[in-house]
Image (tube, rainbow, N blue to C red; front, side, top):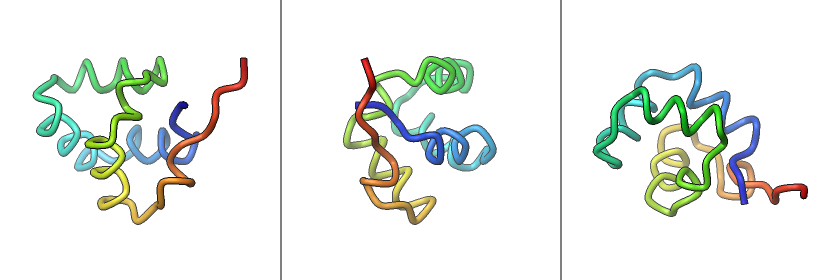
Length: 69
């Protein structure tokens, strides 16, 4: 699984959303930005999906997509 482009764009462009992810993860903004660039599997953990969903109003199917190998 990976984050959809819609979810990645929301995180990239919304500093408040990045701040919430930083609080949940106890990681720096640099780490969150690296995860976005890499579309890291870390961001598909339920605690991050919940934050993204609550902040953006997107549902899980809009946030996640299956990776194409």
